[in-house]
Image (cartoon, rainbow, N blue to C red; front, side):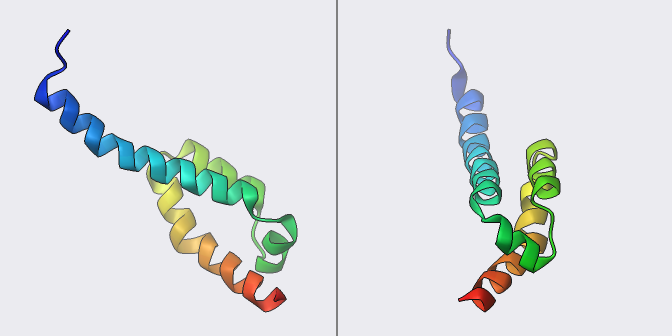
Length: 77
């Protein structure tokens, strides 16, 4: 069975999106609960957003929650 050039192109475009999605989900899960509390964010809610809102979820997490988490984490240091 030959997947052809189109199949290869679709795979090459989908792979980085899949990796980005997995990275965001792992980042949500690995961030300690005290950092989430210090940032005033909800870890469960963001995990659901990243998991169920395919492309927009990880982008929202990267733009909205992650800067708040990094700021809260740097305050704790």
